[in-house]
Length: 363
Image (cartoon, rainbow, N blue to C red; front, side, top):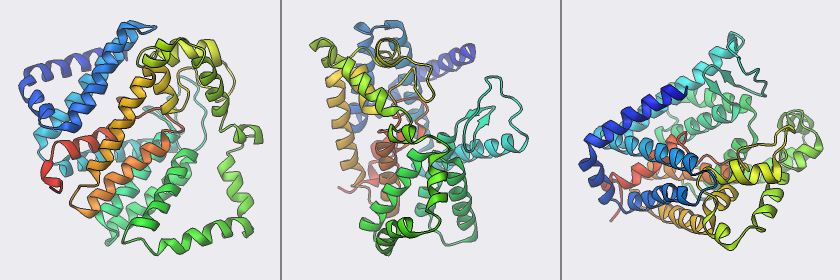
């Protein structure tokens, strides 16, 4: 796997190098990309003071190369809609592979993986990813409109897959999106009635115990109260971080390294169930530890700027699709850390859509 990754990164580096003039043109023509690359370069520079300089440099440069390759590819395609189509085909293929692996019993399970919900062991696709891909498809269906048999079948398939995955953070994102659509989307105002009925139904319905059992996934009350031990991790991590020097709090311990090599071993390294040894399972806390207060300010400002640009998209349905993707990432940022990681293809698609295609924006 390491050798394959090195080969892929080396190949992408070569492609980026021979297209460097086009890449610079893409970046310099967009304020959004200038801002994003400021953050990515900050990640690379943080290797200077990182607790593990080589790891920070490697992960940051790898991310920089892969993101740049994506933006170059989007530019060559010439349309965000072409890219979106291919991206959704790719994600759909991963979901199909998950079902295929489940049908044949996940025979390739060299790590002895045991998880709830839908998951695949080859390739390794966890329930959270399956649920997230399904939610992307639900957002896509709203963009395409639910007016033919194909989109209706895709809607049913995506919804069933989402619920079979049993991933709570993604279900929370679905609830947040439903509320947002009911309050602000002109085609979903009828959902406001459902917002009133749903809590009442949950309280008085005889199905509430079944719903609670589904959501609990067999976890104890203690595990539920601590959000699968996340609150313990957050408390220990924050407590350890505030005891560090002012410089460490200001600049962090290095991108992708602070939590993994400093805070985790000192404050919450554990073999207990659900306790991560690489992440706090909170994007904002991870950012504070890895990149400091300065990194937090940069990223928060970037997100505020990004949503103001998204709101300028002319096409109403595409605007809501991008808003939905943004809301999903913001909601899940409370429980996960995968926004600036190489796996976040949809996040970088969102960025490319509002930065590389100015004709989509209102003046």
